[in-house]
Image (tube, rainbow, N blue to C red; front, side, top):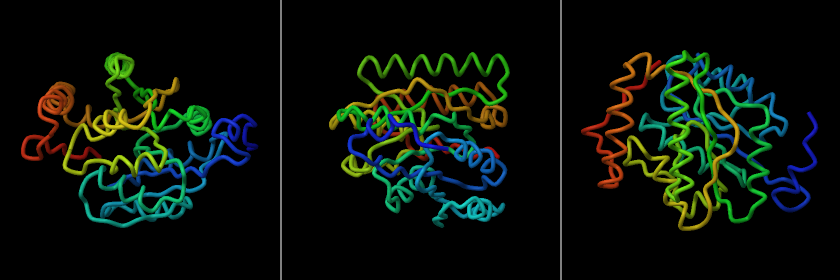
Length: 250
């Protein structure tokens, strides 16, 4: 599909900066085909898709290669390390980080470029909603979106981590994602980005699976992995592995 005329102009210059999509994975063969299909439907296509895999045993690498993605093999050290590994190998001037179980609106990449038309913007995130969500799940995500937006408006930018972007130069200047944080690592990156520019929220929604909530229960997931870890992060700047070891839900 032809690239919208406004996208190149929005980022300055005649040619839009290259954009790299980075997907951290561990046994995500079930979800990747839908994600890749939503990438193929983008009004502005990505220049490269990098799958930073962490020792998958379910055919994740094969699915990614068949879809034309670049696969980077690595050890299983968490999504933060995978995102950093993908960013280090990316050729794009813009890095778009997406979870493997997300479904992207067709104007996502176009919206990223338009947001970066403001030179003060160094990064941003999207809203999020449950794919095929029940009413209680939609309600939970509505509240989470409201919290993320309110905190960002109040000067403490939030980033739930499902889908977010950074200029590569800004990401590198910030030292990337803190790999010692097992939770809140994307919030931390957004907060630190205040030192070099603006972090914005795009007015679009990315859908994501509810696998963690449905596997481990709403109460445990919300209270332990979201509320408790966030409070401790704000109090100490840490989310210790000995307290929070979120087990992947597949």
